[in-house]
Length: 394
Image (tube, rainbow, N blue to C red; front, side, top):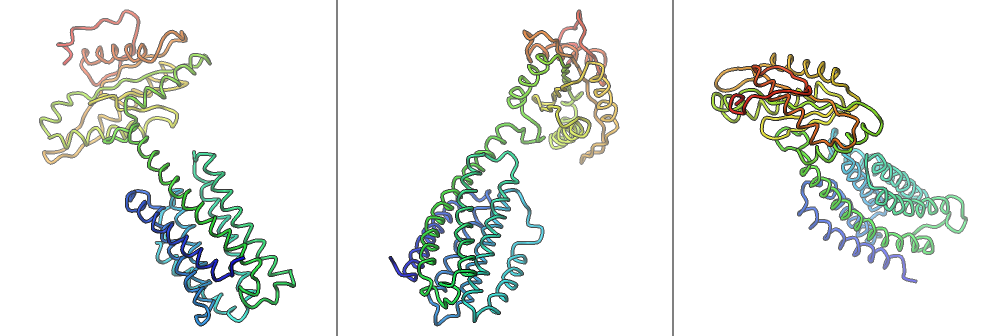
């Protein structure tokens, strides 16, 4: 079996290679904040191992503090991956932790046993916290979570075993160096090599997953308003409509068109026109429920699909949206102004042969009729609804 210092060097070299690989990944994927901290954590780990190899003559408590600090940085990266913010600031938190645990290792500098037990206890605690961070991540892929859990659980159990051996086993309670406890420390460092490889691989996989999620979100969201785009809306709305028909529950659809939008662009500029779209999107979010699907349908058209909502209930909501919207003051460089909206609505039938496009077509007929009748109004679709020519509406 290799001696402990040789295993330390092998682990340091392995980790340095991982740092190089993660540094490249971090440079290529700057939008994923977590990988930068994972890279930094492993770099701190390498520095701690080098200091450990140089002990003696360097004091062992310094390397213990540095290596332990590396785990705090890795935990911080996992916290950011979950979506945590840096409300205290990374530098301040890490400096405070380093001072506290550095002082603890300094006070235990004459006891190899208790210093090693403290280090092991911290690693076990941080392993649990790091697992918990991804456990709290909503919608996280189950297979990745279990791989993450397995990796950190094995690592934590190795250190938990180490803690109890130094606490209870007379073969180690009197050890004064790593070489004196070579059997347990050799296993610890060999597991560390496997852990670093596994952790690095998972970091890259998690970064790739994060980028894929971002791409899916970009494909589903209208970049100006932050609402669903038409494609994403249709995918979700079709499922919602089918579920309502099968369960005998009402589903209604509101189709909205901002009145005289071209004139707004002409009179106040396209920047003001974009501001109207953004403000109206927020207006819809503020006046609808969480289950409702809201979409920028195209241009100045918006659509809202309302599950478990009858036509009368939808009309009440539509009237609230319309009435409150005409009170909203919109600022522009050419003076403040107000805008109005026309709304057509239709309720889905329980006939499963009717699809989303049939429902949208009926709401569209009602919308154009509302525009014919003077705009800034709501009209529900009724059988036999008559429309004038398109030219009279525009």
